Image (cartoon, rainbow, N blue to C red; front, top):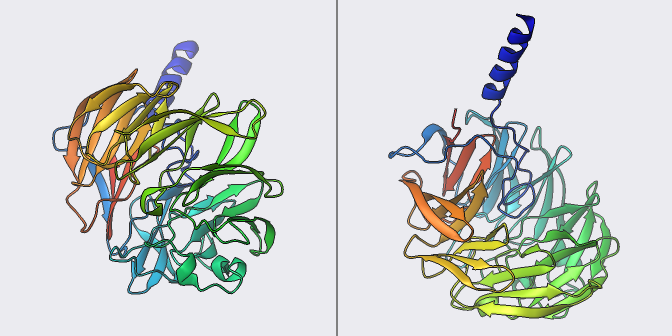
Length: 413
């Protein structure tokens, strides 16, 4: 009887905690790659009307920022007039605090906050579209420090000459207790700041390449370790210990837009750009100090919706609104699902989830490159462009549309 009771308790625990997940501390998930690995026990197909809406939060201001979710608290940013605000909500949608952090860029016709706050050890870190790095207390929202990195590293140049056309859209990276940013100046194409007070720890000299809307990632593969990102005309790899440039691979972008962070596996590094340029895959040299072109493919031209790499297959939504999968090592097109919608794509518990510019949230089943669309629903609340990246955390799907954030229950149980 005692053994049966123990078994029943274990079964209840398994059912009650089917979703066991890590916090989503960064832009596009804990590993910044759009893959929410720890998410399990999710619905494999949504009801026709969509998953259950748990809550909505309004009044976020103009913004394309995604969300960070830590300890049941949800963080994001928004723009009000010329000023940006950082928000915290609880897991029922109640606003806990709002902090105005300073000026934001007009956006060249696309106004709104770009940055998704990065969480680390009780603090939130963000980069404004005008190039100011802000640190805030995650519990209270109190500003700890600010640094205008374009002024610090611009050597007297006017900020306008250092800004990308649509403003900086970088979500900051923490590596080895250092805050990594990409000022895109001659003095510092990349820089590391102290988490404590924003003091400069190291810089990587630049060469007239401004930042390109890309969020850096830490490359750890095959025994090699470096920070990898895209500038306006190059892919660069930087040593996180001292900022030394490991390699710079020339890769000019249309309109200087490299908004998709690289993904990699087994020494293959894939990058993609919109406007018909498509993507390229590079092979890292055995010594980790250079790359060579492995292949190019033009149909998967991802604008700023990100890509996911699952089991050696690249998945993304092209500018032409097709969802496309490619073999990582050869570039062979494995599947093209036409007219599903351009947008942001993530992966959780065996499913692709896309948020398209038409406002549809789409679920698809990937299988060795095949893409089977199984569900969709419409994000009706909010206004403006549907450009935010969705997030899944502990069985909740978060979708941001302009001034509105919606949370959906996507648990199977």
